[in-house]
Amino acid sequence: MVGRHVTLALASLALAWRWWPSFVSSPQLRSSSSTRSTRSARWATLSNPNFFWGEGFEATDLEQAAARLAEGTGSDLWNKATFAPEDPPSHLPEGSKWTPLPKEQRWMSLKEFSEAQGSSGNVTEALFLVLSQGSGYLEKPKVDKALESWQSPDGSLNQMGWASSLFWAKAQIAFGYAWLYGMSSFCGYFFFFRPPLVIFLGIDLLPGVPQWWTS
Image (tube, rainbow, N blue to C red; front, side, top):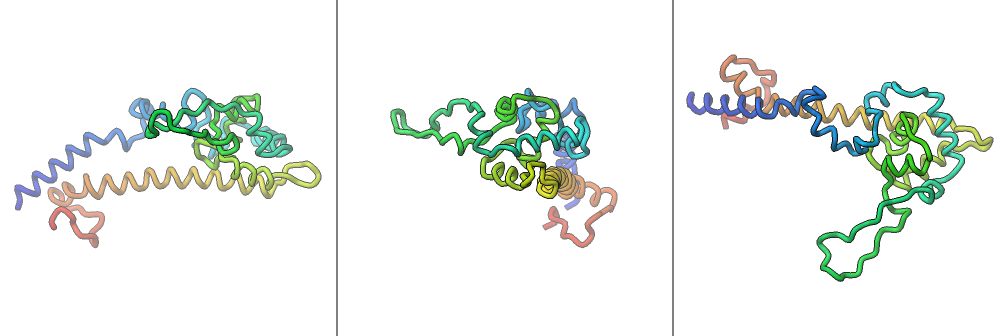
């Protein structure tokens, strides 16, 4: 029994050491994953944390950009955008009839949004994050709903609708980070660090939870 516990503890430590870079925030250790950002590292310069804290752009500039965009509709934005041609799905047999998605059903990336807006920079990226609610792409029905809530009868920006969109975009980003780091920390302790801490040091931060390695 003791030998089994020691083997399990050593295996847990080896796995923890192997996957430790996944749990740290060093830019050097994350360089390979950062290039796979959903907003494309070649285009995105405004990080989600900077957007959350309002760093890298002026709030008044962002509101002015939102007000200009709200003068139109989602259809106007999609008509200005240029989407890359779609390729047929690989699972379709060669020669099969395939119809690409209509333009209004395509998801818009940051690159396409910037080109449709005729602008780039942190303000444009922040506006993209508000419309996408922190995700990597824009969906036309959601953009239509957001722009409608930003419009006022006098042509100015509806502050209530704008504040709601901004709040939920930041809430989505905060929840994503909380889930990622919260769950990764819990799973790292529960599966990798808890067994050796209990076996060698008698320390258990979850005393009421069954010890899965003893069953």
